[in-house]
Every structure is written in C-alpha cells, then in structure tokens.
Image (cartoon, rainbow, N blue to C red; front, side, top):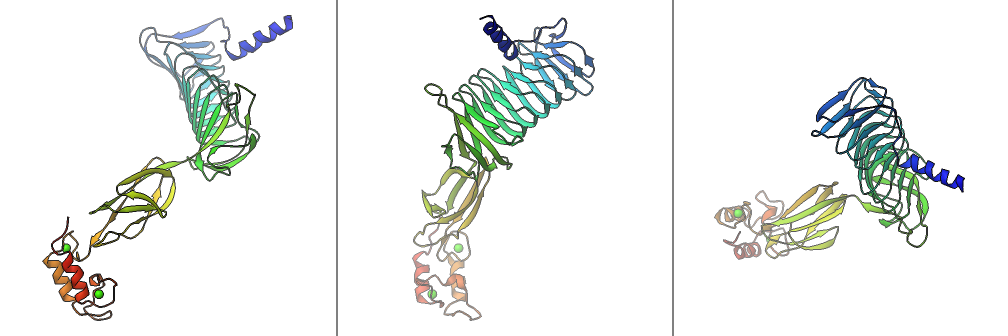
Length: 372
Ligand SMILES: [Ca+2]
Ligand SMILES: [Ca+2]
C-alpha cells in the first residue's frame, strides 16, 4: 500500500508540480526586461504592476526553471533555459535559443524557432501553436487542449483526452508510431494526395503518406487507440487543403462548369481542394461562348475566373452592335475563306460556312443595336 501511494506522488510531481527551489528571481514590476546574462536561480515572471515581459536573448542562461504566471510574459529569443519553461498562467513564446527541458503549457505557447529538447505538453483547453523550431521530443496535447502545427521539426505527436491537434505542416522526424490519437484525442491532418481517403482514417494503424498544406511531405506511421466505451472517440481525420474558386461571366450570366460539372448560373463561388481546374461555360443564344479557362487554386486564396460572352456581331468589341461593327462586316462582305478581305470573326451564320453572306447579315441584324 505504501508503495502505491509513493508511486502516485511521484507521477503527480513529474507531471504537474513545479520543482522546489531555494531562490528565485522575480520580475513583476511591469515593463520589458532582457536577460542577456546568467541567472543561477529560478525565474518567475508575473504582472503585479502592469504587464511584465521578460525576453531571454543571446548570452542569457537560466540554470533552473522559468515560469510565466498571472499574465507575465516570457519570450525566448535566444540563449538557454536549462529547467522546465512553464506557461502556467502567462504566455510563452519561443523563437530562438534552446530549452533543455520540457515546455509546459497551461496558458498559451507559441514556438516559431529554437530548439525544445523536452516535450511540448499542452493542458486544459489551452493552445499551443507550432510554426517552426525543433521539437526534439514532440508535441503532446492533454485535457481538451488544442495544438496547431504548421512547421518545424517535430519528433512525435500525441493527442489525448478530447484534445485536438491540427497538422498543416512540419517535418515529423521519427519514423515509428509518432502520430498517435488516443482517449478521444483527435488529430486533423490537412493536405493532399494522401494514401487514405479524406475523412476519418478507417484503420487503427498504418503508414500515412501525402503532402501537407505547407508542401512538406508526410511519410510516417500512425496509431489510433480505442479503449472501449467512453474512450473510443480517438481519430485521425484527413482533410483536403482548400482554396476558393470564384467564377463570374460578363456581360450576361451564363451557366458555369468546373471539370464538366455544372455549378449553376454565374456568379458562383465554392471552396475546393487546391489544384488545377477547367472552367467552361454554357451557351447563351445570340452570344459567342467564352473559351475554357484553366484555374489554379491555391491554399487559402480565392482564384477569380471571368468568362466574357461576346454578342454576335460585336466585331469592334464594346458590348454593342452598332454602325462601326457593320463597317467590319461590310469590309468582309461576300468574301470566302482565303480571300484577302476574309474575316473569320464575321462568319456568325449557323452553321459557320466559310462565306460571309446574307445568313451572317441576318444574325448581325438580329442583334442590331443590342448590347448591355
Ligand atoms: Ca461593337
Ligand atoms: Ca457565314
């Protein structure tokens, strides 16, 4: 019995408590401080007299742990923190330097550079944002916390306890079981070309390959662990990288098609998987249908495509069929294909018959003085 109690104390101590220390340096007076020297103690940052920000910069070295509490802020820009770096109730950012232990998040943590040798642990509804840096022991999300990974080098990812992890980029450096969803944790991976269909991965383990939103390749093992009733909600969900394709037509509104599927009458706009699409247009009586267009849709951007219908007879393009258009037709009058005065644009008869004659004039006069 005694042994069991001891075990519990040790586990709690490792996970949640802050190491005891004889001395600590407290920053609490408000304002911004720079540590470019060595501190052989713990460092506590809080905001008793206004927002207090401590920046660890080149030359800075904290030999023990460092904590941000009560909205005190810690930014590691360079230098070294030997002990645990805690975002306890104040935010922490890491953009450079080296953290030799873990990075503990119970507020808000952002990693955009530097090296984190221990794990980044996120707890209790809080958010961790990773866009760069080296996380040499990976990212762990617990207790309904949220982590977003869009860059950096990350050893492994774990989502536990109803937590959410979104992966849009990054290089995952361990090749063995480094992406694990368990205890209702959900990992969403955004990209294209996966070897599984979009949606929830239907198997409990395997190797995932594909291209992440960031363009980085993923080729790693994964595991989805179900523990039975109440704990079987773990999932890894694949979602496509998306952008928006927005299509309109001028001067009249025609039907628009994307890869031969009708989207309806313009204007139309939809979120689609990134990639190249062929946009085509439906016919409108009295108008020349716009040519097909290729649309390249990129991540989080809107690609605009406009198809312009041309009124039959609008040879001098201004949307109206008027006298100057008639002058163009007159120049080509009674010409045949190959003649000096042949003008392909004037062959608007149905069918186009390689001669400019009354059947073309008839279409022309049908649109006379019309326009937008
Ligand atoms: Ca005209
Ligand atoms: Ca003709």
